[in-house]
Picture 1 (spheres, rainbow, N blue to C red):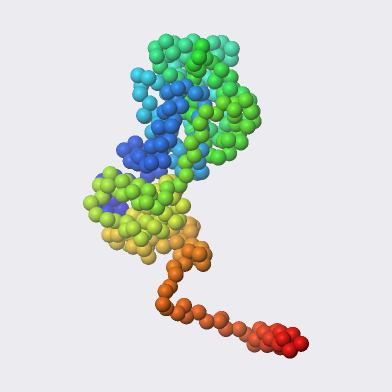
Picture 2 (tube, rainbow, N blue to C red):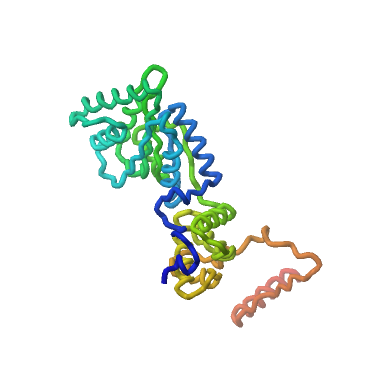
Length: 319
């Protein structure tokens, strides 16, 4: 069964591939773009965006890339896909992305080509920026030293190249492999999970853009999705995508809480019912009504032990 037709949707609302039309301009991302824009416009050198898996780093990287005006920036996005990157490969790749034609095989010659290209961009009034996604893969001192050297390419009173690294929290430790580079970090943006209110707006935004004309996933089911996903967008997408599929397979027009529980359990994620019991300080205060608490039942052996304790305490009182 086509779950999109079943729910009256025109397109997939919860794909985990970055899709520009579905971008949700939440407050955290909006503030991140503003801060990074400031860093890049002033050519501060190096900025970091760190967050856990599924926090939306790649989505933010593509959003930032799209937000940089072409008349003002020469911007590129470099995605690191493995840990075996070498300094030579990195330098050649960066040169190509910044418009160096026929990069030289010799490193010194290639650096000269890159410097000339950056100088030409500077004369055109453009700022060179490279966004590096999955930057935690850059985990050697040699690579960190290469970036430090690139940040040294400058003209009087201005750097010629800026970087934004997007990666997991371990990225900050990798930078410490080259302390002088770590000291050059001009800004750190930390992406966290969505709170419930933001996630509800996120799901509504995606469903509306996908063509939803009715409430398919009620709030109670979405509350369970938020608890299961901890608010991380990638997991939210996975849970909600399964909500739509499974509800279509059983012929339901909405994702009932019972179905939501089954989906979340099958995905191996925590159920809302498994949340910790609130502490006493957070329990509501009942006024004018007995709490109705009773002592729990005890077995015979425990009862005898309690009687012996009472007897000993009584002897102390008599003394």
